[in-house]
Amino acid sequence: MSCASDPAFQRATRIADADKSAKIALENENKLDPAKIPARTFAVLPFTVVSNDTLLRPLSFGLADMLMSDLATSPELRLVERLQVNSMLRELALVDSGRVDPHTAPRVGRLVGARRLLIGDAVLAPDGTMQLNARVVDVIGGTVQELVSAQAPLARVIDAEKQLALLVFERLGITLTPAQRTRVEQRQSVQLATLVAYGRGVQAEARGDAAGATAAFEETLRIDPTFAPARTQLAAAPATSSAAQRASSVARVIDLSAQAINAPVINAPVAPKPPEAVDAPLSTGSVLTLIFTIRVNP
Image 1: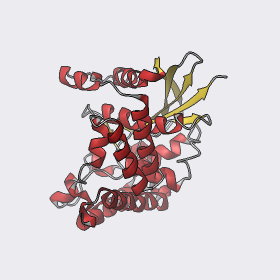
Image 2 (image 1 turned 135 degrees about the horizontal axis):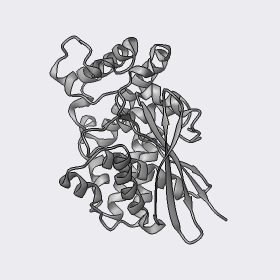
Image 3 (image 1 turned 90 degrees about the vertical axis):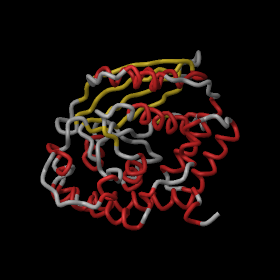
Image 4 (image 1 turned 45 degrees about the vertical axis):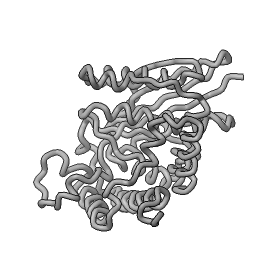
């Protein structure tokens, strides 16, 4: 297998591109105007875990990724790529500390282009029930609003994630089509070990470890060959890893930062871009930031 077709190499290339974009955004932080961030932009962050449990931390990364996939079902939400969010968290030294709270969330939101962020906590009760409680933080006003709550047994924690996704859509005033709702509600029998293995892959990628992420996704498929998210992660990388599109992505971040974030998205006149640049994923686009704290009761 050539380097160009190797999943780990492709992932490392995309991580490097995202890191460049994050550095540029930080260098231009004083030029970002949160008032110009579109109202329905969101980012999904790894859930914060307050526990030494070695299973819960990777699980939190996997659940956040799956929630992001469900939220992407609606075209009314525009989500920043996970790679871009993680690169910014690495720049801010927040990947492992997980210290994103109502005070630090607005800055993260501005840097990744999120107008609002969901934060909250997840409590694992002695009987094995996990409850997810979410609140919304407004990047401009800094206000915190109670939002949604969902719970399920730890062995079926995916049910809580699905409930939460539907409640988020409802509270945001987004009506799903029957087909979209069916897609979100679709469940498969997933072992906890599968979710944890997948979460280890997402966590490794968040740390910038492309080889570790690829190995974890491969291990996930060894546990459960039918687990679609892991198969998607190991699929061939899209053409966005080409040199021309990488350059276009970085150039676009500079442009967005200089003009106040996301100005081109809200119908401001922009110079024509080549098709590759237009179709490439936004580097600093919309995001729903979800921050959860998992506490384990004694």
